[in-house]
Length: 278
Image 1 (cartoon, one colour):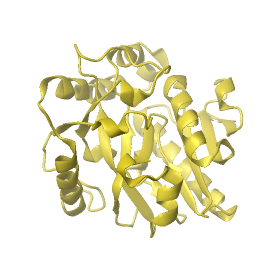
Image 2 (tube, one colour):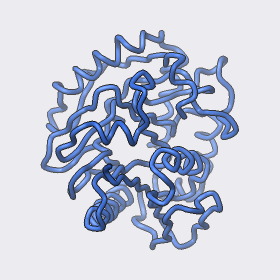
Image 3 (cartoon, rainbow, N blue to C red):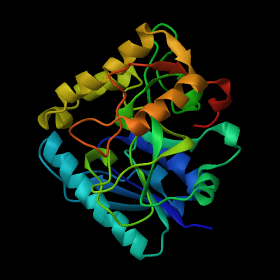
């Protein structure tokens, strides 16, 4: 069996981190989770018990410097974990959860143990929004996918999050520098960071984020809620196949090792089989 671990770095994001610990802890074991808190002023929550946790000096003073500094830090940590004997390192933000399609009948660990990985493996990105009028506030008391059913097929979240060799991630895990990417069949990255109007509004009012220039970024990303509320939802199985083909062969001119979607804004509704995954 391959040794698999997951790493993340967070600052003031306990809501999604709690789900991250719960989900990846169940899939690969809490003793294989490595959580780094950006700033020694942070408090390590009790729900992280059993995972490896560390407070580090705050990285960066604005969005750009923070992103670049964090990914350099996490790339170095991933390389160290390979040196300690891990075969696969999963790197994600705390609001991102990678899962195989339930139709495979496999857990995440089983999937990664039965699929060959060269340098990196990507999961097709599903950027969840909140369908206003149909879906209420997101709660930790119930599975996320019993509360959210609509997502945009976003190439931004088809990230090179799973690596099998020491390498250098680009900011936000969006690519692996100097390497191509491969999108795994029936594998998805579920992004929930902009799936709840109430949580987005609370982030707009977070003085720490505002001081680092996050307001424009958060406003831009909150448009996912508008898309899933106003756009017609397409057939999931048909469109994820098309998106996987498109993102495999279409690249932005400025980054050959990132996927693109030709400007399409496709919203899909998840099938019932996903409801209890997360």
